[in-house]
Amino acid sequence: KIGTVEELQGQERKIIILSTVRSTDICVNDEAEKYLGFIAQPKRVNVAFTRAQYLLIILGNPHVLCLDAMWRDALKHVISNDNYIGCDLPPELIED
Image (tube, rainbow, N blue to C red; front, side):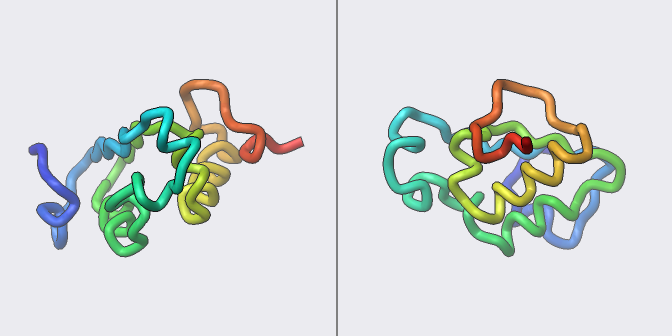
């Protein structure tokens, strides 16, 4: 099933693929909140994160997502648990 976060409210699925892809050069160089849209709203992100029973796959640009504190924390968690696969990470997400 393909749908918005609101369509998943009160439901669960075995696997969720969450697309946060909104990246353009302007996203990284301008006001992040203006371009992040729903993915910057904690309640909606909570619904998206908690609908998967077994696996949550998040597609997105970590260079854009880390501009938001909530996403930065989520990315750090994923990275620290060795669950990140993707492009090179921005310096603020790389632990020394």
